[in-house]
Image 1 (tube, rainbow, N blue to C red):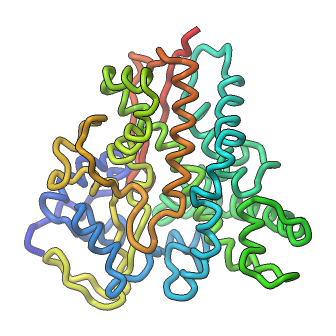
Image 2: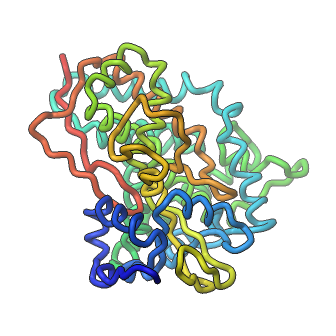
Length: 397
């Protein structure tokens, strides 16, 4: 390695959780692909190297890690390759494409946002993240898959349990217990759904998974889809709500820009794209594995090593973005990597921003003067999944 990064030897996962911006900013400058002992893995931090690794199907196979395998199982859409990956994506992607979900946005997403705002009516102090953004997000994603009968509270618990297990399991094996319990519940619920949907298909994603592309009278086995379902539920239940949180928090740092969005909701898609770049919810949730020894960025990656792609850091790469630490609605057009890139890019990259757009649109239309509590410190943390821990607001009357 051309640069001494011995300072990483004593860094703990807790430090990375709480101080990721400082650590990753330093790595972008000193060692864009670096071995991090606390993770027992490499981490790529620049736009160039994240993009290069994600797009390189010749030298890198789909991402996996002991934590992901332990929580989700195999085969899953993150790590599968070849025919297995193609078959999984052929089943997973269609219900999440715009032509499938656009006709129902108002009757599902907008209705969920308005219902949640009605529930919050009369409350004075609200945590926008836990009380609005997350509930709307989990409700909309779960309903798309057919979990209409599962309570929002239970959905949020599933999301937090799977997230905690995936991010903390390697250093805290007890974290797996929460993830195992959530996965067992989901498997039981899906099993009951499958029995019903065999003979009575509907428009849910699970129903499409069972029936699409199958001969008349036959259904696809759902067993090998369950690991991918857990992954999609974790990402899907998390990303739209935290995209809302990132966007709202970013806009509050630029009050004049927040006012412009309130006055002109047509700016929301651009505001959300910048929010996803500025504070990417899936910060380092994707990985790749070299299928042979590879020389990259002055280091040698060994076959079988785990390489985490820190898309959140790539979205702050100074070589790509001017003043990347600043939220800027007027930033020149530039794609972001919040949903990844390449063959393993997020299946929900079209659906998640629509949930975020409608949730923010409804919030700002009903409460155009809503602002964060001025005396409350906003804490942002996480290296795999990153965002504010809470967003307290005093609801205008």
